[in-house]
Image (cartoon, rainbow, N blue to C red):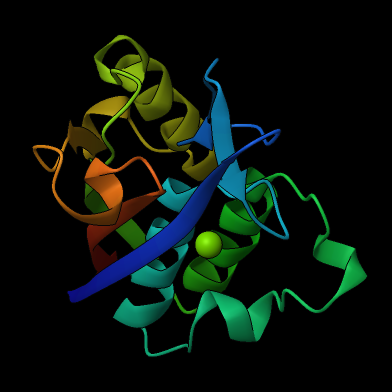
Length: 157
Ligand code: MG
């Protein structure tokens, strides 16, 4: 067994898409990023890489490369999970906590779980997605940014 954790933050601004856990959410602000800015999938990629000591997302998919400009982060997750499988491991479960003030995420949780599970080829009940506000405190509370924590467990397959 190997355990991994990942963390990511993106700035929120008008005129960008809000894509979280592979699901596009209608909102007045979105994540400023080189890719589609999906903090959920970025945190998850870092957790998967971290579990096997394979570095981090910035190392594998540099934000200075045009190849990743506007890229769908589901592709990054798919490539990351291929590395995990090449090492002979598979995902047992993932537990994800998303921090943002707005919009309400509850209506999109099931879709996010399905989206992540289908990229990884695991049952949806292996993926947990939770969301919380920060009670209007800090940069998340001021709706300046969104952040995400991911914890995962791998087992040798
Ligand atoms: Mg990121």
